[in-house]
Image (cartoon, rainbow, N blue to C red; front, side, top):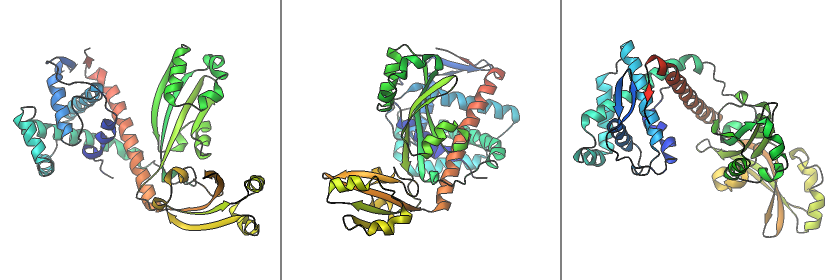
Length: 373
């Protein structure tokens, strides 16, 4: 079973998004687990420890992200204590030595400022490893059920959804603004909902499995659209789809570029059936200029254009210096093994996050968790 390395990459995603909060407060109790208090001192130590792995401004952070992380560590540690799960000390020391070799000056600076000690760093390493190991044990059954095979090239993309969900009863309030909403960014949509006193929930979600999402949304993604407005029996979804081509999977595109010096004729041509299978017939048209590109590395192409093309016979019209041209995609080649490995790791991370969240929620009551404002 592949080992998760949460120490290196779990927090990288979290801390890119951190914003404005100062963590220099006096000691206060944040929460208790089995009546044992955990304070702002514990939180600040954790923040400085994570800062050893990720370079961010400690005075400009969203504190709740770190509090949730600390709660998670404490609950997993409580579970481990009850089950007598331990971490090999040699493994902890090895990670510390590796960290010290990479960040010796930073560690020394933290120690000299009395914000961390070697013992605190070792304890945080132990807690991280402990949580990783417990999550790994829960992963075993789910890993065997992961399906990483696709037939639609969807595995060449990183896909993220940003969307809002609200009750169907508000349908009449926003139906007139349907087209307008689809042209706007998510912040504008939220503002419009607030102005209309519509209660909603906002979500950001990375997609690693099309089988686990709304069928209508699945079709929107496969149709290569970047926005959606989905009306169901009880709720409405409005959102934006962000797709980025993955790196390091050796993507190559084979396509035709078709253009004409006569813009009027080109507009007439666009009404015809244009497919890769009949490209030889299209080449007979002397009014068109057709250039073939075979197995071109994506890094040599305009990624913003080609990430909008994901399957054979997809077409894209581009206006270039007052001249229209058509891109006709005929083939995408990529390292399927690397793409599947990347998708598998994405799914592992997603499932791990789900396991962690479910575990914490299930154990909070059992461990008498109480949070303080």
